[in-house]
Length: 306
Image 1 (spheres, rainbow, N blue to C red):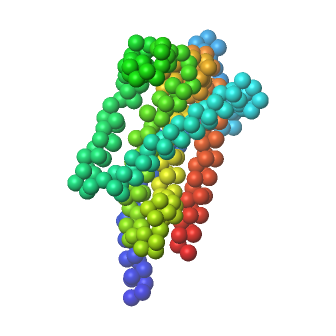
Image 2 (tube, rainbow, N blue to C red):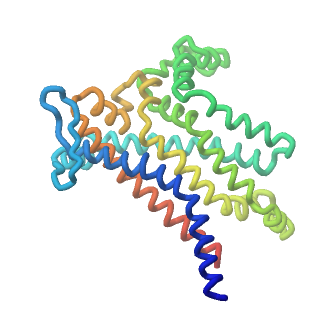
Image 3 (cartoon, rainbow, N blue to C red):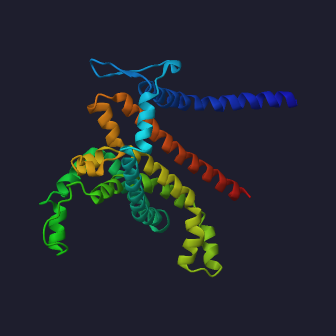
């Protein structure tokens, strides 16, 4: 009897495990294979006449010259400043997303009336219906010297002369990144805040904590996993972003990010192998951040189980 039950359980597990096959196939086809193709270009060669990439698919014949050169540039050369600038822009944009997105997610999840919550969620999803590039192009018009932003600021007597926002200002890039990615931050954070058991908050209030103390000691700690997940979802595409500063600053070299360097190598310099090598280096940096996120999340889960 026990043997029969064991066999049935194994068959049941195999049946439900089969549902993961489409997802595994998708990851293999569009992630593993894609990364290997990038590595083949990075460690391959360049056609001397056409200046196009000639991928090397055999790992035993990979040439690491381009990769080591790009790594040296990132650590000690001209690309070091670009990486530091990218980290600074992403960090400031993430801070802006937290400052804007957390109150919005908290209000929709915990304070908004239930009958309005669906409408508010629809408004939060609305930016995804519009192309990111179209939204950036709209901002280029709003930030023109005679655009709506300068007209409103002058009408409010906040400035005497129109400000040139599109001349390579880092503030424009940071605000553009914040505006473009804050919807990605709000939705996963909302999901976490909405699942917090209201009885825990009520218990804090019953024990004499004020609304502020309850938020700081109950709601905020319980929302940390969602805050970290939202941050990861937000910063990963930011690191590879190359069109925000291209549109909002006309490609000014003063605000060049890693994504712009990758685009230049892949499209304009005739050195696609160096661009692919830079992609691998950026991926390695992001993998370190992802490992930190996963380790922290697992540690928090184990502490919660105790």
